[in-house]
Image (cartoon, rainbow, N blue to C red; front, side, top):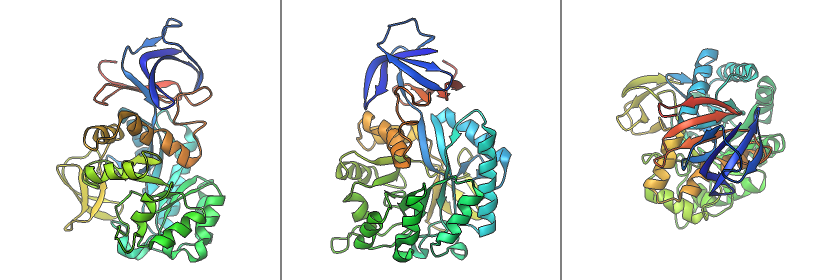
Length: 382
């Protein structure tokens, strides 16, 4: 199969090109018009498939629930927003609940359903700080434990690829070192750590920060805190680009501070995504979904998550935070792939990579999505 456009996103820029696909791989990139294509998208944007490394669920389903049907419906729905790969993200639950959710994700992944690929699990909790726990249940917070992490990895068939930790509670940074040595990207989040503590956590293997600015010690001129560390290092930094979790001006400051590098667009969407405004029970927490699509713990102002879509996040970055189209696309594709160490399989349109492709209009609405070379989503004009 050959598809082409006058604007194909290659090496951080848009160029006219043809993409040759055989089965699930990109086997060649040719000049535009070199051969008669199977699909000509004229001047529409062709970009790598989006990778959401921090997402808890949608349509009433949460990754904490051991429901194969809910997870399958979720992965089949994600290509409509351009997502071709994702990390189902757990929340802080009892050990027994976490075990059942990990088993469920592992089972569904092995079934290889058509849709967005489950490339691992993001374990957000239970190793978080109580004062910065957000929606995470206080009674299930626990001190970081190498033994508990090893148990979860064994149960999930080594599927945990990303873990959020409050580094100040990790004695001698033991879990950070162990997890980073054993296939998991360690991200600092839900943390009240001081600047030096966060820097030492990075030196011991952490390499990312979870939902920048949210649920972490803020920047102060006499104590830079976690925010100071994330803005003053080359570590990866997630950002929820919905305009409610982080002000657009602060999002722009983040991109400027980090030189437009190593920023990762995430949705942090929870099970209310796709549901109407109202009150719901998600991950054993009662939440209120407002008209803007932001979820809060019922009866409080504490944000519990979003209903953001990845293509909407790109639209926000470009239209509201004055981020270039190129840097916004990188935040949804190559940067998360690099953070997970899979950039030679995902996140780029290049020879040998998976044929995960998204066709976009200029307003970033999704025209079509290809997962592993298969067109799994097509809008009415496709």
